[in-house]
Image (cartoon, rainbow, N blue to C red):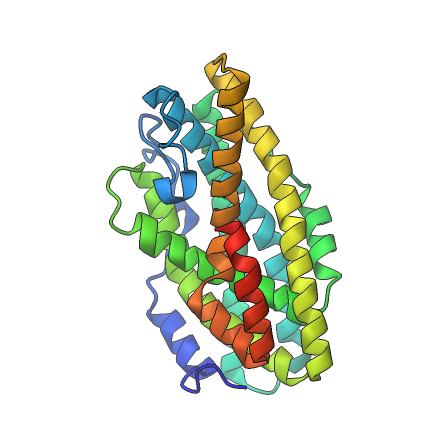
Length: 306
Ligand SMILES: [Fe+2]
Ligand SMILES: [Fe+2]
């Protein structure tokens, strides 16, 4: 059931130590200000450029609202990742020093990311000038997620870690158009998430090994339920984004134009948070190791979110 036999806690902990350390205050605050003349998200996630009946300024505003949403959704998910990783570490504190240190560093980094996303949201709110609402509250979302089977939660976290890798490598790494501060946030987040993705691979493997096939199937079903829960949340977030867009631009659109904006944004949000994770080859590899039939299931479900 092993995905990658070279993956060990010792090797991951060594990689963590090689990853350059950074602090939230190195990335934002003081002279470091967001540039609101630029987009915040790469077009592959924002999905605004096809809306050619909107002015360039309006498309950039919508892109920035999506940037705020990205900060907020990541803030939300980090809030359940943190307690989950701590709970996973705690029962085996004496077994393997590398495991304990690697998982505690993982948790510490996620706590830092929560603070990072909060700080960026504060700066955004101060600079954007229009209130943007977000779904939540985070504690309610965390409670809903964490009541599932640990393997289901670990799969969702693995999905999130790989999707973060994809977002950076495919849309941000070589992108010189987006706000440099936002790009720096995504880069620094990605650097640490690369190690988290490996740790999550080991977590999914260990939890899978401790379950019967029947339990693994049930847990995968719960992971899919969590995907639907996330999708419902995204539908609510879309309404909030469009409301913020309407207030920020005072734009009067026809009914058919609103429908086009809504459809394009629904697709872009589904791809950002669901499609780009569930179709990631590394995620699928871990799912296949649980049982090949589960990979086929993921491959059936994935395209609806792409
Ligand atoms: Fe993170
Ligand atoms: Fe992470």
